[in-house]
Image (tube, rainbow, N blue to C red; front, side, top):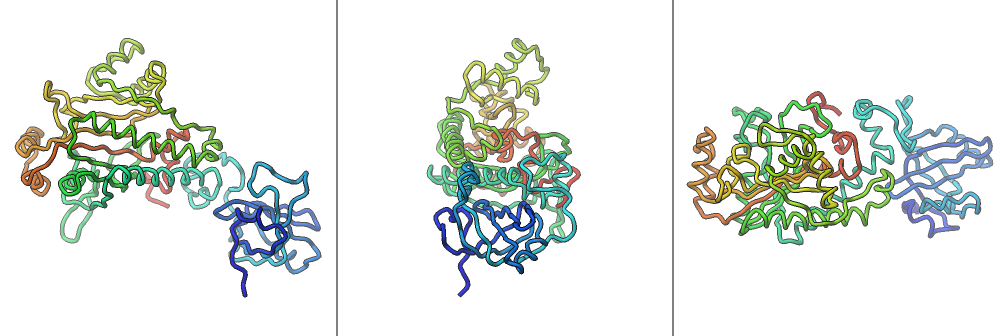
Length: 442
């Protein structure tokens, strides 16, 4: 009977037992009569030893190189005291190989060595060779942390009575207006890729009261920056029966700090690898955009002719939040109604300002949110004021004919959260296979 596969992380508890390991070779060291492998699987890494007196296996071992996928059968032994590596869970044991089988060999030479701790290559090279670069332990760890972020968002939203939904990504018209959408041929008609799940989230409020979605959105924006990509994963939410937009920020703080707590507890090894930290949990300061612009002018000498903020302003206002409040984050509120989407609720006491906000984290906007218009006639009027035809939004407007509670929501740019936690230079590093203006492969 064939031995059941053992995961490498289990080997410290299996000393003197014969086991079967399967994984990929990271490093080989040929010492003449002894060949050492560093073998890795999803759970960890172990040193495997092949000795010359096992002639058949030794000849096979000589052929093996980095990234060969192999099956090993042998005894787990305790490593001699001076050879133990206390920094690794499996650093106290090694495998004495009795049988070695190559499952898959590497064809040709690798363009670079992925077994090194740090791949000192430019971003374009890493992206052009993405399938190989992702095997590097440090790069791979980005997506283990990202996986935890996805899990944490899903769990905290579910725990707060939000229903997870999945909405269409092929639409008849753009949800955010403007021209930053991708057109696609849909049989004999023209369609667009979703810029956001906004309309469907609001429809969901009328059905479930609280909804959230984790899904892709597409923006046809020709950016060449370290913070933009054309397809990203948005953490969306919408909730009904709010008293005002402050309720959204209150809920958001609970969600964000739960995600950070989980990452701190479950991804400490990855944080250490990047010399990174999650932000300290403090009450996130909230200031009006107009006040932020005044601070930027008076404190940093940065003047704005329009009521909006640029990337440098976001960085500086975060410096201010850190200095004044000890916070890595800051809410900017009351953006001008005219620069927000048509569904955004104007402030009752000043319709020129909206009940909306952005969340800035370590100098970069990671979230936009706000209260929505829930009155049918007010929404129709808002659409007309933007020079749009309400008839083009009849499916969306229909839900407001049936009665809708006061509601609002948000959308996180999830990759930006990962980028700012780990201190990555480009958002593309936080995307498994990024899509930008020039990149459609791999």
